[in-house]
Image (tube, rainbow, N blue to C red; front, side, top):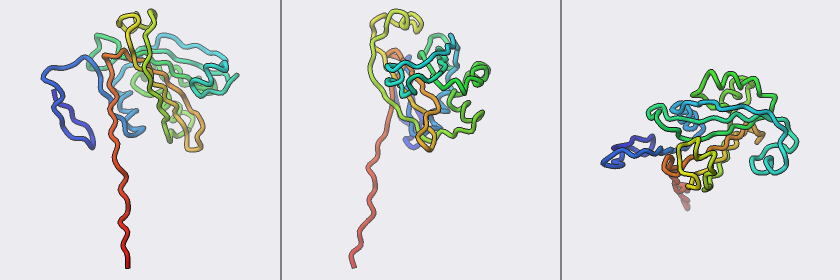
Length: 193
């Protein structure tokens, strides 16, 4: 197996294909591309008032009226098993994107909000941590209860730092690898007279 990545090149990954998914992110455009390779299967939508604990964990406004769209995502090239569980949270003023998200399963909900409401995504804050899959989530993802997973919380922000949407994604440990590349900053040469 070989992989080709923008700004990285072609690499030999393995002699046999793996069942997991590798994600290399350098920009918001990369996130949009990843969404295009996944199909969202909406499980349910709920409207709620954000309590203090949830607001603190996700960066929402405590007492804010929100909606949460929960879905299972499946990689378009490997439809036989769920890739991850995703909860997307946004203010209820953006609720009109709910039917659009169901009609356009390959688009980020934050990108739909961007199109419909003109709120340009300028930055994405991302937190990654390990979690243990509870029995319910493990069953939905065809994984072993109590097995490890990866939890990713992404906060989509506009150029003023205002929150557009938050996604919380849980991957079973064997279905996702986050790949990052860091480069040393180049310093300008100092020329002495």
